[in-house]
Amino acid sequence: MSPHRQLQRRLGAIDATAIGLGSMLGAGVFVVFAPAASLAGNYLILAVLLAGAVAYCNAVASAELAATYPASGGTYVYGRKRLGEWPGFLAGWGFVTGKTASCAAMALTFGHYVAPSYAVPIAIAAVIALTVVNLFGITRTAFLTKILLGIVVATLAFVGAAAVMGPHPAGTGAGPATAGGPGGVLPAAGLMFFAFAGYARIATLGEEVKDPARTIPRAILGALAGAFAIYLAMAVLLLNHLPDGQLAASTAPLLDAVVNSRLGAGAPLVQAGAAAACLGALLALITGIGRTALAMARERDLPGPLARVGGKHTVPYVAELTVAAAVVLLLLTTDVMTVVGFSSFGVLIYYAVANAAAYTLEAHPAHAPRWLNVVGFFSCLLLAFTLPAVSVLGMAAVLAAGAAGRFLVLRLRR
Figure 1 (cartoon, rainbow, N blue to C red):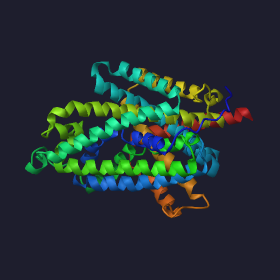
Figure 2 (figure 1 turned 120 degrees about the vertical axis):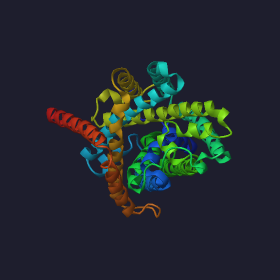
Figure 3 (figure 1 turned 90 degrees about the vertical axis):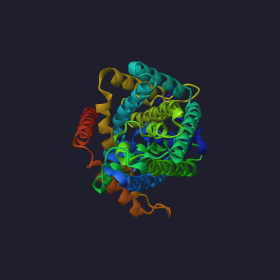
Figure 4 (figure 1 turned 30 degrees about the vertical axis):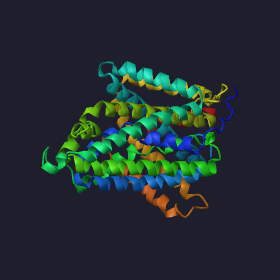
């Protein structure tokens, strides 16, 4: 079980696309439309389009880099290779810490859907079960992801049918007054962006994808196109079906869409679909964090044992188990939903580094000109610094703590 053992290339294009799409169609698709509508109101469609444009900039940057550097770790690796050790470290550290908190929140959301009175024990059980699946190899992860993704897509199709069939309270003037407006489009776009930015999970698996130069770009762009189409369709249908104020105030907008339709008896199906979405996104998150931790340990930016790869399924078992332990610890000791807020800032810094790294590449395909990297870089920073101050300050403190720790370790090694 050498710590330098390589992972095996076992994922095809369908597997990689499913993992990316499963990440983007997580619990977010079941809840994000309400807070976004409360900010943007009738301009919700514009917020989705803007988020999709920023996501496209980041996706093509990630696709170019992943094809050039098909190794585990995603933007951590790209930042180190193209910009230097420190930008790579900040991207990797922000991803590992922020997404670990996101894992805890996703697991807790699943617990609340299944049995609110026992949410924490159920969340812990979900983390343990999915970690076991990951330890049986990336092909098992992809197989389970495709099953969960199928359930989620079927649920969303059912919600869409309910919204089309009506009746449509939006046309009756029912519900609270219209919320939001054009001034809320930018922060609403920030929320929407986080909901379907899971294509990074494909890049973090670069070492396990067959023919990565061709497969990874296709999987990233295919997953993004599918997620964008679904989010845009859902936004259009919800705005047409529910009064704006009711949509903005809802805690479960897709569930409300079904309840307020002729298919109201199918509400439990939506709850089951939301639970499956939580599990699918959580599975992809744990996988992506483990691979990034593996890459950072290989470069000695995290403890060396995290780089161990072993077993007949060639998985980074120490990193996977450590991530699971950290998530369980968060579930047992913190208010997860307040901790997770800072991860949004970290994700945008992560993609800003990806755009900056892609800008330095010598060749760019026609669908991803170099100027798009500039747009993506500044768009990420713009969205990052329009987040609530507590999110910005929280993640800034985490990044600073990580940088200080790395600085001290480097000094001691010298």
